[in-house]
Length: 364
View 1 (tube, rainbow, N blue to C red):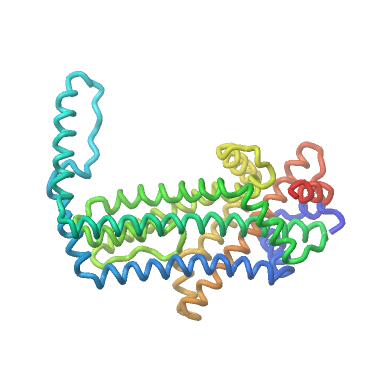
View 2 (cartoon, rainbow, N blue to C red):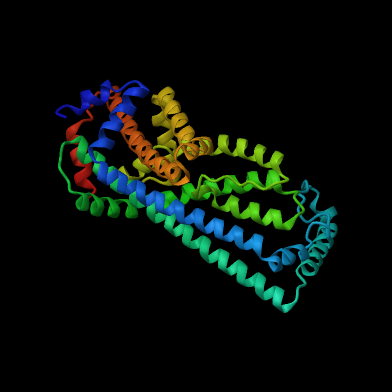
């Protein structure tokens, strides 16, 4: 690796970038498999918790009866309906105030429960909120740590510098937790908002509170897992949701593909600047970027999960997809260096070993 400027410049096709990524992935199998294990452990915990919650909901008749008594859909026709706003505020002010009063009465009547029901509902909401907070914390910590360790390991391998597993883990975890925590939260927030908007679009008119609650739980966990929501009786709505969600989520994740590496290299940038810079860099090799994202989306999606499950079981599928997720993180990092090299070429500069050494030394 004596001339990285020339080597990066030679990586033009998608296959060459993926092959280069495979070389670095296999050069440090223990490190990258350990990172895959961290992702696998997190996803396993999330999906196991989701299964336990769903089984509790299915087996507890008192909870189902509690949801059935919260008759929110039929009590008031304006409960879940979006109305067009008017610009004639003065003429409609009295009507709007009257509607607010009716809405408050509706909420009060809809939630008029006994003490035991209110206590059970409060406990459930508190438990779910606390559990979801821990899931977000775990997601942020794990992905920040994994990205930081992967960055340090790959860059040191590119410059031919030996670094031990513990050294890479220590340096990478510090870099990731320091520079990527906010970015990971932003990425989660965007994906969660998209999922909820699509969920309300497709499932907002479901009147069965029991089914709606189960769907809601699965939707909240979709940014952390590849398991799809599926409830009998709503196959048409769920199929439409999954198709739309796959397209929109792929587009969102495509915009964030280089954001982690940009955030590590330059922590002074704002979130908007990071996304803008990432989209600009991908536009310089747009065809290759689209192909890499398509491969990543297919290999990490529900269809690949179904195929791998039929080949070696559910645990086998989760292991393979966790390893592929780390591999494509390496691929996007290599892609980032390739487009940086092309940008330097256009400006008459060099982007090679010296720049990578300065980069990794400056992060310590």
